[in-house]
Length: 150
Image (cartoon, rainbow, N blue to C red; front, side):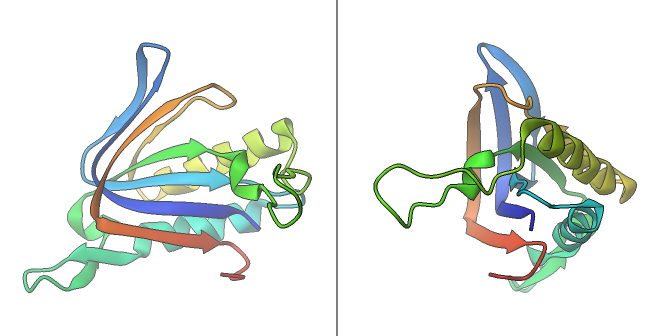
């Protein structure tokens, strides 16, 4: 199952070294973790779910509007550490995370599914050491997975 941490933001930015590689205004920062055995259906389901989440305030201050309704953007950052298993010992095990080639392919597919919804998408750089700046709005932070385990 593809895992995601979705944060509603006023703005977000990711840098590699001193170079800004992705930046957005109002929208979501999505930290995406691909697991072993995840497939196209997982990427498509999660992209559709995120685009249509109703977590932006309407005129009455109720979370009733989607990213599409507010013209929001998405900054997507690959994060294999979402698959870190910390149940035993003190050092996480990442054995359930997909390998780099598989993960990058599904990460790119996820991004394309977002763009298919005519959403502006910025990204980090796959397998790079990145600094992610998040101006969480609310704060609103959601955990999602493509197989509805949490």
